[in-house]
Image 1 (cartoon, rainbow, N blue to C red):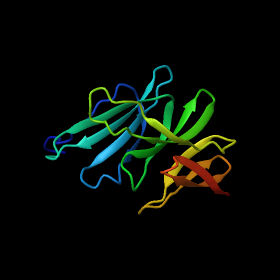
Image 2: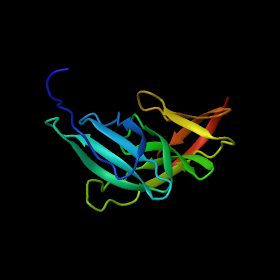
Image 3: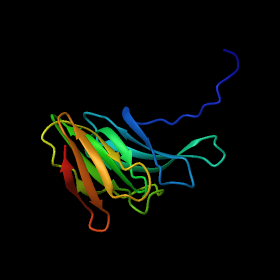
Image 4: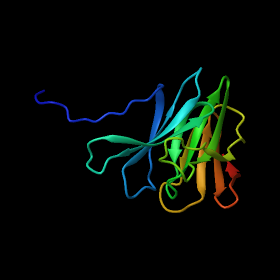
Length: 163
């Protein structure tokens, strides 16, 4: 292979397992990534590619209380995303909102909007309705699939059905 690499990079403090594009950010190319540290407080990074396309910029850095095993961005609101996380032997999932003041050096904490806590076994992932402004998401565990209805105004999620 000839020639040099023109790639750009971004460093995280801890190991990461997941990255997701921020579909609702139509003005920029943005990503969310979550770290996976057993002993340290984990982080969610909001990363944006510069307008020139030459560097990755951290637009927000937020504490997350647990190891992040999966992360998915809401397709209609760039400030909302879901995580699947672990704290020791327990797995959980939640919907989070990035505070409006992101981009500052001391960003406030993420706001937990809803917990997806109907699962009885290890949660694998969450998936948002792929396009449009639909209030549905799916969570999948080792035995079941749950369809959730998410209400942004009331900041809660309800199970619609379990398969």
